[in-house]
Image (cartoon, rainbow, N blue to C red; front, side, top):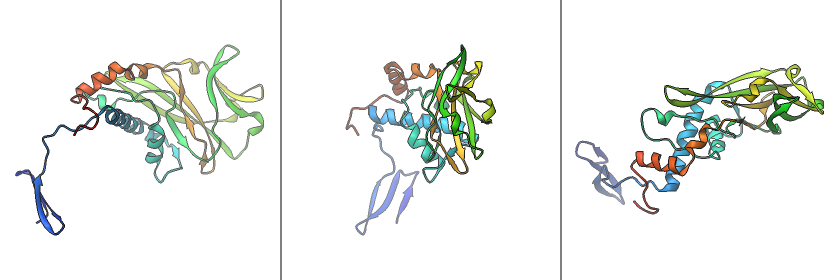
Length: 232
């Protein structure tokens, strides 16, 4: 007999030709050391970001699936700690470094600055780089508070080369929008099925209050507290 009896709390399985019976549940507290909790919070945030980003026609071409590709990159982001209350498990935060693409083309180096006193997204794209085969996709991320729930919303549009401003032989997007501290941007190069690996640049700082030691302690307590390293 191999299987389980949920009502009795028993599980039956074969081991070395003999039927072994064990309880189907454990009364031990689930181990949650600090490193485990940090990693679980990172994964929670990765999933929350992906739920917002996946509808944006993204290009992640270096792994078998787009989500695996995104998750491997998003795991490098700082951990943000949110308590286990209400809908906070769905919270997502705008921060520098959120990946929006991954591919084999060279990365476009980007920074937020000003051009003649006007906010701008500066790039290292040279004016000689223009090609009729190449597309530029601008991903925009917006930090919103929706019924007390922090969420990032993403959008994407194609940028024409005519929109770019040449500054000392390099291209920039110049617009008052780039002063908005609730937004972030990434400019992705696309040639046929290839793209550049790009991450968000932003001035948004809301996420920082969720990265502190105090935020970690509050969040951990809401999950039942941390266990000592090596505890079962």
